[in-house]
Image 1 (cartoon, rainbow, N blue to C red):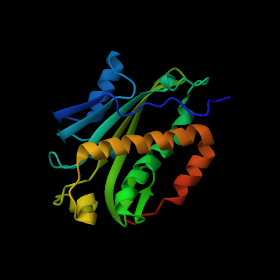
Image 2: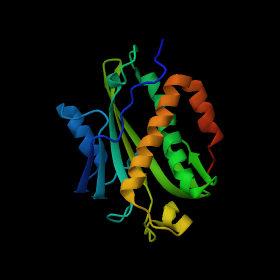
Image 3: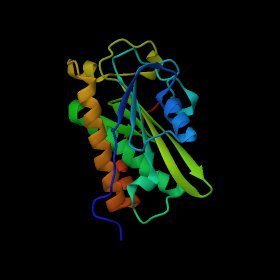
Length: 215
């Protein structure tokens, strides 16, 4: 039987990086070298090659947005369970729900998820998630969760992406350190719910928050 409260640590230690190619690349390199600490969060002030879905770059001006990667070693959850690639479906949905809940807390009910894991406000893209996993044999061992969320940026050059930021929505400036802590808590909450309630409940909850964006 699974414990009532899974042991999920996210956001500590917190490492801030001035400029880097990609927080996901940085974090995964540490995992491969055996130097990663589960629960770590790496946030970059600026990314030269931010990674988006399908090899796309993620545009972000320096110091204005949340650009981060969380590292999680699955065995650190301390559950009597062998994690497999099949578990990644529920995990991905829980992460998307965590980011959605965080952004919705400021931007309101127009916040939705576009499958597989983009965050939209209305028909405009506010954030994206890129999860990269390490599997050894048939055992899922590590997850690197890359998240980019538009916070204080007001001018974007990639107009075809139809971006929007939290500042554009609310007309307020935000403290990135405060938001980082809130994002960590929101992710931890939804991942805990996924483990306790199961994949089916998590996917059902995600579907209720999804929209179809026509291109």
